[in-house]
Image 1 (cartoon, rainbow, N blue to C red):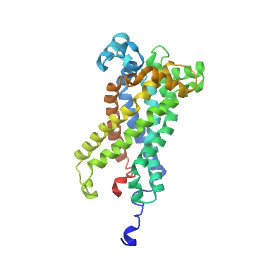
Image 2: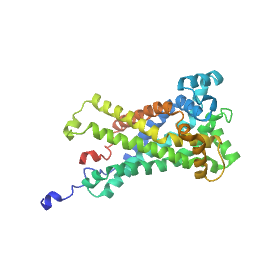
Image 3: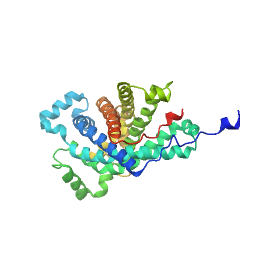
Length: 318
């Protein structure tokens, strides 16, 4: 093979130069897609959380548990925690999606060439999603702690601000981050499933197509690929993150032993057992598939409406 044939391809086509305003658009699109979807899923999330933390509902289906909550608290009971959910995921969603665009670009540049980026694309997807989610969870943790406290005890506080300030006042501001480690254990696998599986689903869908053929796909076919990829990624995200989600619900409710978070997680995990850690997985898979799919669809159309540049696409180098 000649020296010319071995020369790595330039990175310019793979790593566009994003301006600050481009990241602003990524943040806005991510914030809106996450707050819209998570806000809309509040009733399902309420039922799922109650199934996880209330022994009387543990063996109920999504529908039967929902009926019991409505009978006891009225329809408004299914909207408990709507405000902290919406505000929390407004911040988290913006940071996660913009962060993933940023870190994927940085990691592709570290790879040094298109060939190396393709070779290590799995590591790039995994690392980009993990780093972005870590910083996004710093913004999410206080709102998530407040949401779970309100859902687990509707009488705890009348709303988001009062609930957040009550936790900080009575238990200390640090208690708002009491569940930060299990939140990371939940959200980072979630992000890995969401972004990495979505990337590979698109790769599978576009396999054998040239760039020109991809560009000529109808909007219906593009939407079908987005929807199908989102559903599969949502199932993966739910399965990977559910055990930590169960433990997080217990910790934010105040259950379990005191002490270092790692030992609390181990103790709660042993007490719950494998089956207990996956309690409520069915409803959560339904919810997560809807969340992830909706987020990718909304994210795409908001970016298009705001004339955002295309993100880093490693598939173009394949």
